[in-house]
Every structure is written in C-alpha cells, then in structure tokens.
Length: 303
Image (cartoon, rainbow, N blue to C red; front, side, top):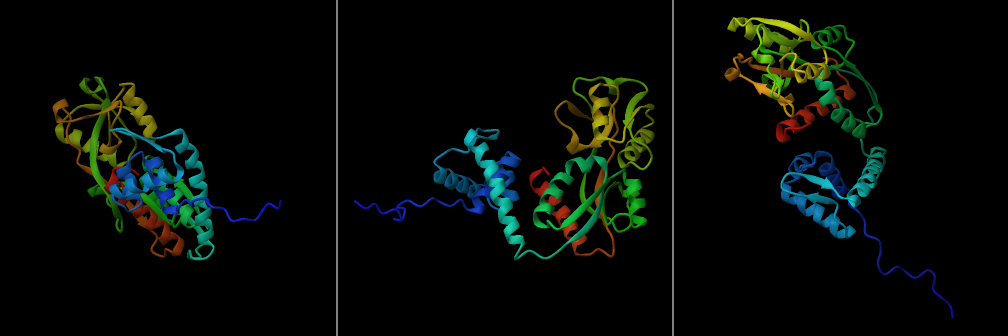
C-alpha cells in the first residue's frame, strides 16, 4: 500500500488578522474596551465583535470581564506575547517598503512629571512607526528647558506654564486645574503656618500656589522641596505637607483639598510644546506623535 504523503490538508490553520491582534493588545494595555476603542479608532461594539471573533478562532477565552475591569486569562497572557511579536514583525516588514524613509536624531525635552507619564507612550509608538529615528531625551524643569530651546540644544520640548508664564510660540496641548493634594485622613492642611511642598522658582505649580496663598493672606512655610513628583508624593503621604499638583495626578492615597478645607483655588496650568522653527521631517513626525498622545488623553483620560 502506498500512502500519499503530500495530500493537501483538509483543515488549514486559520490566520490571525493583524487588526484583531492590534485591538487585543490595546485592550490588554489599557485594561478597558472603551479606551482601546479610542486607541484603535473603532466603536466599543466593534471592538467587542473583534474579540469574539478572535476567541472563536482560538477556541479559548482571552479576557475575564466584570463590571469594573478587564483582565487577561492564562491563555490571553500567552497570546499577548505572540501578538506583540507578530505586530512588531508586521511593522518591520511594512516599514521596509511603504513607510517614509525618515532617519535622524530628535532631541526632546520634558519636565519630570510629564516625562514619567507621557514619554513612555510617545517613545514606544514613535519607535514603532519610525525605527530609523533616534530620540535623545532630556528631563529638566521647564525654565531650564526653555533656555535649552533658545540655545538650540533641543529640537522639541514640553513645558508646564500658566497664563502669566506663557512662552511665545507655545502650542497648548493640555489645560487642567491645579489642586491642593493632601494625605487621605491627614491633618497637614490644618497646621499653622501651612506646611507646603513645592519646587524652586520657574515651576508653574509653585507660582500658582504662592500667588493664591498671598492673595488669601494665608501664612505658610516651605516644609519640603523636591523637583520630582515622587518626592512630592512622599512628603504628602507622610503628612508632612500639602502640595499643588495637577488635578489628574490626585487619586488613591492622595485626596484633593479645596475651599471647604480653607485653601484658596489656584486656577489652571497648561502643558505646552515648543518645536524648533527649522524642524526637519523627523522632528515634525515626533511632534505629531506627541500631539496624538495628548489627543488620546482628551478622549480616554489616560496616556
């Protein structure tokens, strides 16, 4: 008897479509179907249909869902590793043929607080779409970043500013209230003089806080100084001081304090971007990625 070794398979292996994998990864990274929908520019119902299709192909559940959260199953964890590798390989292949041939170096500046929150997302997406462009990052306070831009040491920089500290040519990407942050259950805001944690001259949050306290006639002392948000949080959580922070930074063990707690409002601050006037293609591409990241924050509330 002769066995046919080259007979065609009756059940060919199904293919995982990149769009399904992209949506799956977006949900895994954001922890939310609605946030992922904004990231992949689809409706939440379309995203749900994509995940159902993916689970039907694999014959496995990839997410555990309840009213509050979405988490990966054990099979979902395994798939996530494969999905990221497949998408990376797809991007690499496409970039060889159809992506603009952009290469070079972009010198990017950012304040510490938003460097920690924004840059990981920006750098990840930019590296995926422009693998031939290197990004050199400088983290410093906004006043020093302005000087670096004026000295042509940076190509792009993010800045924190208020209406009275606005730099000419700044493109505003985000405006939000500055709020007083205290420890949950803390009493630092009841002490006299008021213990405040701030940074040195040039900080937009410091400027707004001291101006508000001065107009209120409230006595205060600078109890703690740190250029880093982590240091500010440590002082607040230890109930050593309260601090002016962006409203979006407050949550968990930090609570917002206001007029009911005897503290004056401080108004808004802005995150702006300065781009060198002679910006080349890599710089313009990086600036577009930064804009897109802030647009996503406006839609989803997360970077």
